[in-house]
Length: 270
Image (cartoon, rainbow, N blue to C red; front, top):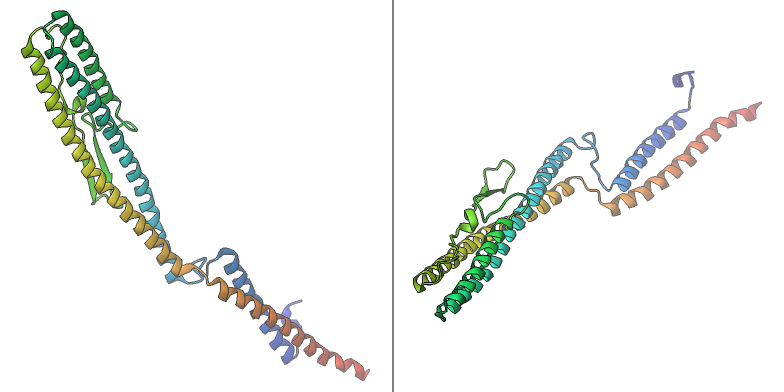
């Protein structure tokens, strides 16, 4: 039987419509309280929903770029750690060379030369091991860091070159003469200067990446906050609405009952 086949009094029909409206508002308020949002779908508010979705999507893209920036920072730090290790060994090699200059014993100089060559091998090994996730800035590798979604803002860090951009010749058998030892010292001094320049360049690039990482973090917070302002519900207001609607529902039920009692009074005539 269709609902139109049932005849209700005007009072009952009015109270029933009011109860249905209250129920709809209760459902909406419950959804807002459970989700924390006043705009859950495009039906709630198309303008706010799609605007918030756009802001959230951009924040998500920037979060991905933040991860890439963090990895780039680690790559630079790995190269800097390599420079530190190489510099320590270069200073040790300089000490050996100076010690060799202080003696005229061919046997002693030969022993120092052997130790020197061992240090040179380890210096090269550190340069080769200073990579991070397949990128080594103490070689010919390059690293490009994107700062925005379309890559129009980026930074490319060029690697120092093979062996950290320095050249150190082996001393084997050549330290019998003072001239050859002095040549080795000159190479070490040049290597130190080169590594310091590379370290300065890495430090400058690291400062840029850190600054952009901080800026991107701030942008993500701004975008997320903007999306929240468009969609989040005022929980205090929604809680008050819930109490008021429950009260209205209770009163509506009472009013509908009274209307029904008025209709039932006809039965007393029989």
